Amino acid sequence: MAQQMANDAKPWLLAECNYKYIKDADVRVAVIPLGATEPHNLHLPYGTDVYEATIIGERICQEAFQKGAAVTLLPTVPFGVQTNMRKLPLAINVNPATLDLFLTDLIESLVNSGVKKIVLLNSHGGNDFKPLLRTLAGRDLTVFLCDWFKMVQDVYSSIFEHPEDHAGEMETSIALAYFPDLVATAPDGSLLADEGDTRENRFHAVNQGWVQITRRWDLLTTNCGSGFPHAATAEKGERLMALICDRMGQFLLELSESELDRDFPFVESTD
Image (tube, rainbow, N blue to C red; front, side, top):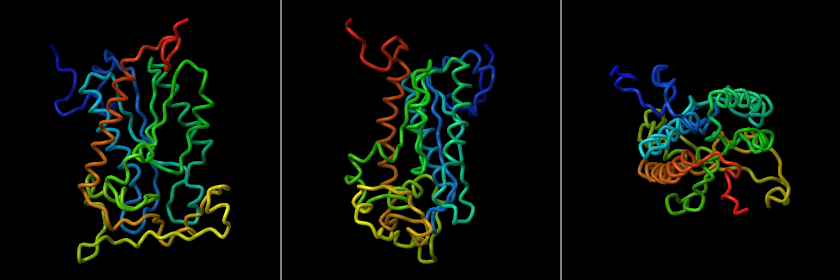
């Protein structure tokens, strides 16, 4: 029998698959990783969200595929919504409506290929895809959204010491674990980063969360870092990744095996 894929190709990564393999492959779930290109304090690369989305997507899809899930990971979308970073150099913005239209076209391509179970794996806090999910509701497909940084909040304090917002302890730990060569350090080996302090809003209602605004990062922070990064370690990043893989790998397996019946994605009706 002829070889279907190159020796080093991973069948859960669409970008590494060839047509010979894909045209006969059973693909039931597609995962779309979404990042951003923006500053992350002084020490992390502009592509931090892209690297995070990619490595997390690869790990969870590998976990699910090796358990039997019919899943594929699309290439990472490298740009996101940066409207509140307009004053910061080379923070590459895609307006929310533009990004939603792009994803709608991408999702339509998947549906045309028979893939109707789609997961958005979001790695950028500035992206808000709930309106897109509502827009697509009622069509012959189901889109799930996973903001991976939100799915670990119930166990966050068992791994990390300081709250995370942007380029803090959690993101820096992931970087130290999975792309350490891109983490900038001082001659003494310490992180080339500030403390990640933020300015308080002058309105009590905003500080309490009763009223919301879009935060301007050039005013909120000193160097676009919100969260203390200096407690980060690679070991913490690896612990976090293991948790994400366990949770999302199992979800992708269940999603792959679930039938697209009239009640999907709810428990079958007894009527």
